[in-house]
Image (cartoon, rainbow, N blue to C red; front, side):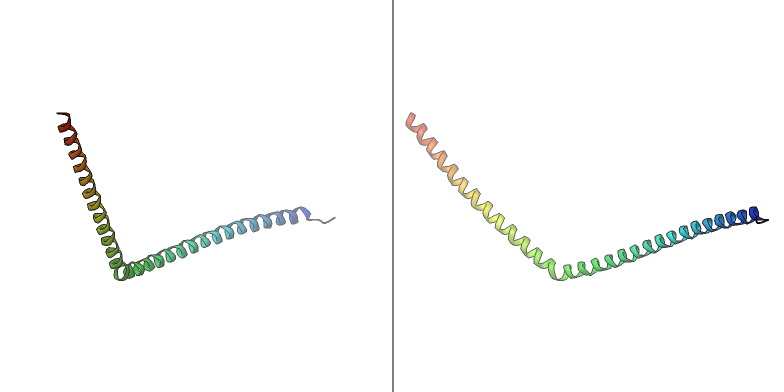
Length: 109
């Protein structure tokens, strides 16, 4: 047999242990780098998205906002017109009901 087989096995086990510790350390370092890269990429995308929204907001304020205001004023005008029509029609019907009620009261007397 080999004279120093135990020492060779101990060296092999020690080397395997050191390799395992180094692989775990490399795995942790790579995961932390991946996490840092992902966070940086996400922050860059977030800032670009914010800038894109500010550009859209500027375009909205110059192009779309007057149209929206005009549309809102037209809708408000139509709603007021319909409300005035409803009030005037209900007033006429209320007047008719009042006249009929007076006529019925006078007929009873």
